[in-house]
Length: 113
Length: 111
Image (tube, rainbow over all chains, first blue to last red; front, side, top):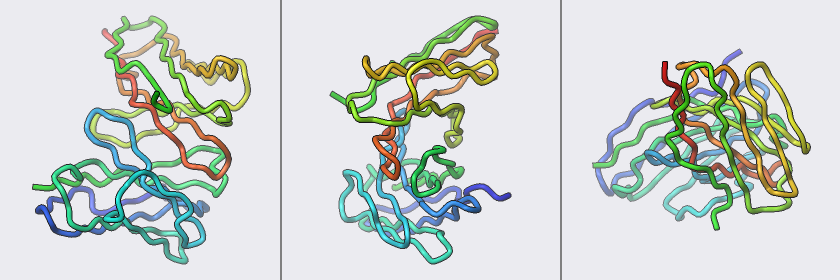
């Protein structure tokens, strides 16, 4: 039973560029949430997708956008990258009610130079 | 006041001792509570969930919840060096809502 898979594992981008991160949820999960984790901090909620719609959004600018596909996989897009966007981006999947907690992917380490 | 607070640590305990990790939350209507362990450079992994006041035990781990005090804790008995990691407290206001994470407490178990 595959867990949550994220790609790529590592990424280096230049300021001003755009990036797309991808996530496939755990089998049977229908909700995908994205978190940003800066070094030494807890994960910060970016947004959550369910039924191909953004259900909730954290305190992140519109440069951060996402998408969920019919097979429940998801993408996170970040435009006009800033140095401060350098972080570990975590995808977490769950059933819609999240009663059993999240299952996290291994993350994408984004470095903006 | 931050939504979920934890002591950042590091918390150092000798091997075999009990490690006690604490978490407070500000939203009184929070319904479910989770503890995640995160090794350096890795993603968080779920250790325990707790939903009702009282204690919940799973092997060497015990989660304690006191909703009146808005406090949740994690006890690790017979601590091992492999328990050295950052422990994240996560709080969920309601089913379907996003989880809010604390900053994490770094635990170091000394051989």
